Image 1 (tube, rainbow, N blue to C red):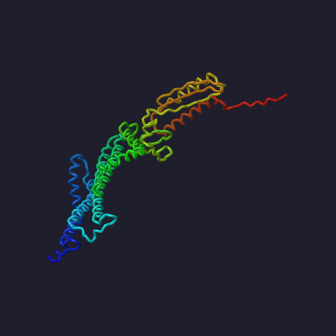
Image 2: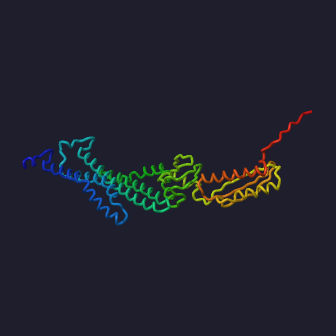
Length: 362
């Protein structure tokens, strides 16, 4: 038996193959147990910072990427103890097969590690979102989503740098320095994207609007559903989904309709010139009475103008910041009552009746 284990196959003794296979098989069989144990150790650290963290949700989120990372790490460490067979170490496009396998293994290891970090970021974001849900301000929720995406991008960039450095043996520092001119050109090409990124920070810290606000920018009116790194997504009053660059949201005149204290409605009546002064006074008094209702907070009724065609009566009134549907209901009710008042007082609107005279030529 010892003679068999001491035999050399592909530049390695058989015993080393069994040891490496045993270690890898051991880790594969016990990966969930080991991952759960390591996740429990990490949970203790997280629990000290956030006391109300659910252990099961934490471990379930990390166990899959952690298991994958452990298997890859154990496989690479174990296989590193073996000598790469010279017979298989041929060159492919000026690179040996050993270098290619080493590069692939390093990439897989780094990717699995970055995946694990991204899952941790997701879990931390979930905790912060639950805490943000307890506050009435929706800004906290969107801020959590924003920084979650931001840190994910940062971690992904770091992962790419690690792959370039450890897998392809590139000096990242020299590479960044060498690409400084190219980077400047790219920065100029991506100027609008950088401006939108800076504008997103201004939106979060200056807070001209928050998630769920009804806003009007340019010719778009709708509800803010998401504030991203580049653009703000608005559900318009036509129920379309509009993406507005953050720079425009900051630089343009933006009307935050959710922050208004009242809604204003206007009523304009053009009365016929045959309307008497007594009728006008009675109409002004009647309109004032109509507007004295619980939903209306402030009113202003006056005879605003006298023209060659009509007597112009103007009224504006303000309601509480009710929904658009409720506001339209109040406005319709007022208009109907004013029409009934005109009918009762027998007052005609200017241009309602026209006399046509035909002159006969002699």
